[in-house]
Length: 249
Ligand code: 13P
Image (cartoon, rainbow, N blue to C red):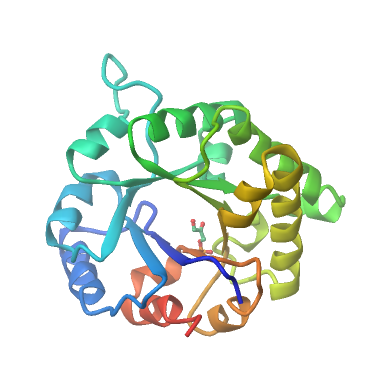
């Protein structure tokens, strides 16, 4: 089991309505957040304000993206400074869906991470290989290259959580085995130890995402380098999400 505080993120992606958000928040407010566990949910930007206003304070709120400027003529974008203004302390950056559909590069994800941290917003930085990359045995190259994109732009990792999300496991029901996930998490920690510092490698949370559900979370949570989860589909079901939050107990 991981010696670091457990971190559970719920990424709602582009899902929800006023009515569904209300019932999700009601469900989340019933969750008992265990000691040494951090829980953060990421609603679509439109609903962030109402979620923060109605969700209990033991649960954090994240945006799903933010930009590299504080304000200005950047139609459609949201700044971390604006998130801060609404009491939002977290942002998910570099999700594979943003890399794939919106062309976000490793460098841009690094810049966004640096800007969010500077504005006082903590970052869930996502990385992960595609199926063809895993099959070509370049998983370690891909995930360390993506991690380097972040490492090149920041010095302080205190407010960063790394989310390893293999693209082939996202939304497919095909979860990585605990051994597969642990192997990549160890690779990432070793890379951090060599290229950043041993202290950062030992302290940074590396969480797993990709078809995590109420049934498979407990076994994944037994691995020493899996410090929690980034949950998509199952985060839209409060009972299942609660089971995942309690997975390490
Ligand atoms: P699923 O849990 O739906 O596979 O999504 C994972 C994910 O992308 C979380 O960011």
